[in-house]
Length: 91
Image (cartoon, rainbow, N blue to C red; front, side, top):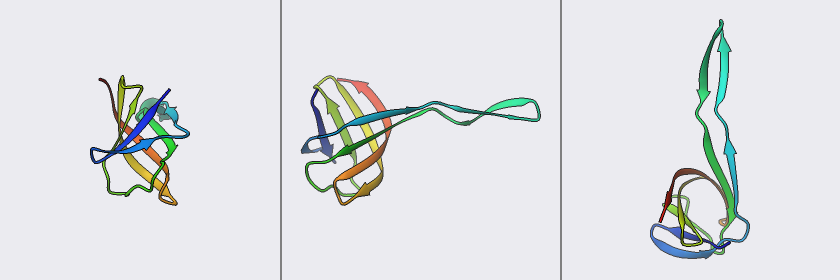
């Protein structure tokens, strides 16, 4: 499968190790009532072929079929990125 990274609309290159992690909702029980303390969300990590800017707007296209719109939460050494998936849509 091919994952291609785009930063602010410009192609950066193909990703090496894409990992998608799904975090379920957390439900807490307080005084006999249950409520959602954290909504479910998806998070990804990958290594960029080139250094990226923290302030960039990122998207990843998977096999020219699915686009992931990302918000970077952590960038290490300019290339190791951890991001939250804001939107996932079919192309």
